[in-house]
Length: 336
Ligand SMILES: Nc1nc2c(ncn2[C@@H]2O[C@H](COP(=O)(O)OP(=O)(O)OP(=O)(O)O)[C@@H](O)[C@H]2O)c(=O)[nH]1
Ligand SMILES: [Mg+2]
Image 1 (tube, rainbow, N blue to C red):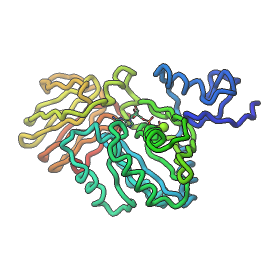
Image 2 (image 1 turned 120 degrees about the vertical axis):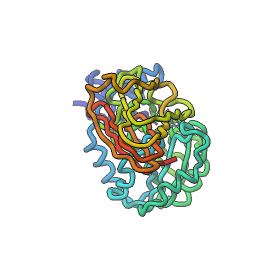
Image 3 (image 1 turned 180 degrees about the vertical axis):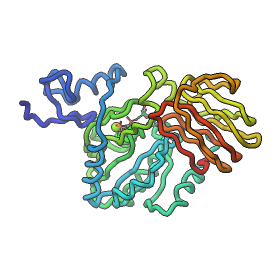
Image 4 (image 1 turned 45 degrees about the vertical axis):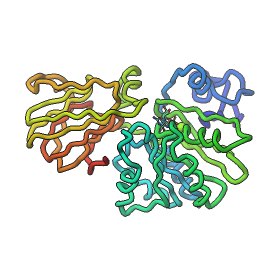
């Protein structure tokens, strides 16, 4: 049995040199990172790990026992249906950090996004729109962290892939002169495996945490090539389709939308530019073998497909969608 408790500085897992098939393996315990992180960092070679959400909830509970400031990081393209529920678990002071602004069209204003959440009754100390990728509002976020922090420790939580580790790495780079640690980042879920504390300076330690896994996300049900396409790397160019009743759209080979009832309507797709979208004759059978869900859409709504993006629909009407039965979808008041 290996009692060495040295942890990987990339993902937080306990390092071990005994079983190559198990988490935390490294050839030499003098290494700082595990083999999985080494491969991700150096070769972009990804290895999926399946974590259970019980562990995540345990971590949240522990965070909830502290009085520390918490950053709740979320991906603007993949906002969770139950985003405000986090406040039920954690009563700590909390900043809601809306990340990946660079993915949304430039015409979408920060104020509008902030107002969308501020209109709810759920309290955050502040809501801040950022893009780690474009260094947008990172300095401002740091100022607000300093303003709201209650102790030296600040936790960074949120769903997997929201960009928590990427954000911490950016803060290390922007404001730490003596820290050379780099957390592992990847487009796959469950990159970070345990909490990792990073001392940014004498006044601030950021604590990275593993993200909540969304079993309802499309990213779990497509192959690696499609995963790359789904993950937008550039600003999304919204694609607008004017549809009449009984017209259909096909998105790659995983989603079909049939407009079944209503006036002429506008469907604007906010998803990766690399994905193929086409109109099809509704009489065709494409993807009708997948699970069908019917939605009654009100004025100015978004149909959200977890892991893919969303479709803004202007007028009311009825739609049928066909999609893998495991993928979660919902309708919300339009974000944009
Ligand atoms: N476009 C864009 N991508 C980002 C941004 N921030 C992070 N990403 C990407 O999002 C993906 C996930 O980033 P991570 O930092 O590994 O996410 P995480 O929240 O730590 O994920 P887990 O460790 O699995 O919980 C990576 O492919 C990042 O490059 C951003 O501001 N814009
Ligand atoms: Mg991470």
